[in-house]
Image (tube, rainbow, N blue to C red; front, side, top):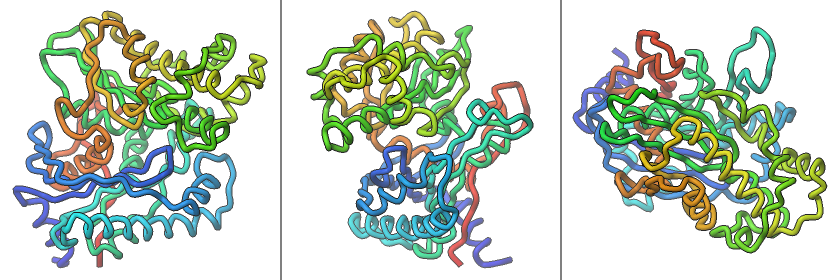
Length: 401
């Protein structure tokens, strides 16, 4: 047997595995790295978050990403070169983090790399008859594996679309497996660039598991801050807190067919981007709004679309517990306003029960890798939301050699 395959089998049989989960989201400003000690599989998976850090991308990488991510057309040469370069740069960041943590690369069993989504095209977006859901990430796993000398698992979203899903939200698979509570109706809400949730009803409930992207999270807020405040984001929502909501603009922002679709559904920067906000401002004669008023209105847009989605699936707020993760948890104004909008809902940070909320998505990909190595896979029914039988595994394996 090939030595590399033997080593892979050895890792699969271990009682514990050290896995680095990676996540680079729609903000495109850096890479989250979560070092996880993992044992078991399936619902018996145990996670110990050993280390977590976010390493920033330099300005030149952020600029290249903006030229190729979520745009309908770009240079194939740029895309080809940058897919390889981002893989190599990701490997450099991994080695930098390991050095900072004083951890030897040889002690790591595998890397779980999400990659950088460059385009997300479910059928609901491309509307091309006969063509499947599609999504594409870059940051080549072979280059990460070769440069770090660590087995790398990547391209998790591709199997999701191959099984008939939209390629997202991937975290819902882990939410359902590990983070439910049979005694509670629980909703795990992640507010990243796009906001998504997993609804996990209590045991015996007549309601069923639901997952979806509710719409924009931070993406329009960050875009407005960069253009109007010359800041990467509105820290704590301080500027938005000073503004007044423009109702005409808010209604124009909400006037989109996406919000009428039933879950499961997904979206991305391809849809909810600065051009979307500009069109809504033009339609509502709100092009001259001050920065505070614009940010206040965009914040309310995020809040209302989240709230509308939540109330559709669970109208009785007092019997629902919401656990929040993602960059949005650091926007104090957004969080206070969202909690007020949801009323009597038990509103808590994800880390009150589990681990660092900022690390959740990176950890989720580490769990996906662990399940590929040591588990039995995920039920196909969790993807196509039917009673389909069978199991499915996520991720492509890149060997160092």
